Image (cartoon, rainbow, N blue to C red; front, side, top):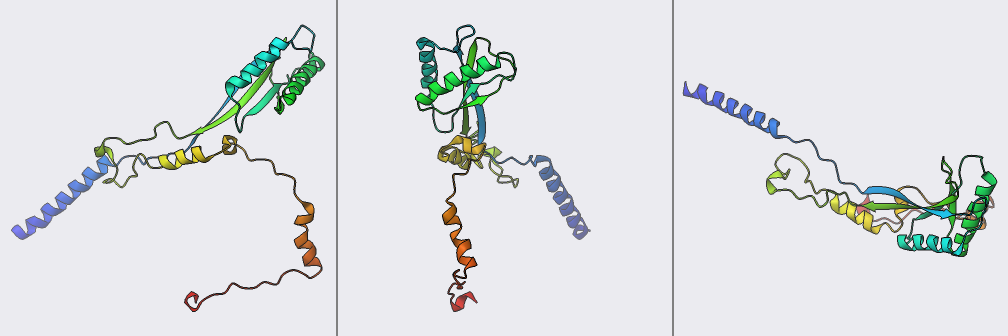
Length: 214
C-alpha cells in the first residue's frame, strides 16, 4: 500500500512545483537599445517691411544664437523658404541674404520649407541629432528581482553596449541617415577592368594550408 502511495505523492508534488513555476514566469525583457532624438531650434531674423536688408544688430543676434547652441558635428543649419507663392521673390532674396552671411562665417546652410510664412521675419533653424543610452540605464533592481532562476535576462542587459555606442559615435546623424558618397577616382576604379580586358589580370593563387586543415 505504501509503495503505491509514494509515487502518487511525488507526482502531485511535481505538478505543484510546475504550477508554481508557471505562475511566476515574467514577460521577456527587451534588450536595451540606444535612444535617438532629433530637435530643431529656430531663430527669427527680422527684416524691414518689403526689404531684404538686415541690420547689424540682427546679425549679432543670429551669431549669438549660433554661439549659444555651440554647433557640433552632425548639426544641420536650415534657412526658411516658405511654400506659399505670395512674396516668393522677396522671401528668396531674404533667404539668399542670410545664406550668404552664413557662408562668410564658414557655415553651410540648406533651405527648408514651412507651410506658413514668417511675415517680416525669416527663420533660421539648427537641426540636432542626439544619441544616448536608454533612460532606465543602469537598471539594477533588488537582487530578488534578478531573472537567473526564471530563465530571463538581467534587466541591465544591453546598457553597456548602448552607452558605448552613443559615446563612440562621432557624428550622431550617422544613426539617422547615411553620408553622401565622395567623388570616386575613375582611373583607379577602371584599372582592374582594363587589366582584365587586355589579359593582364593576376592569376588566382590558393592560400597555403597545412595538413591539419584537411
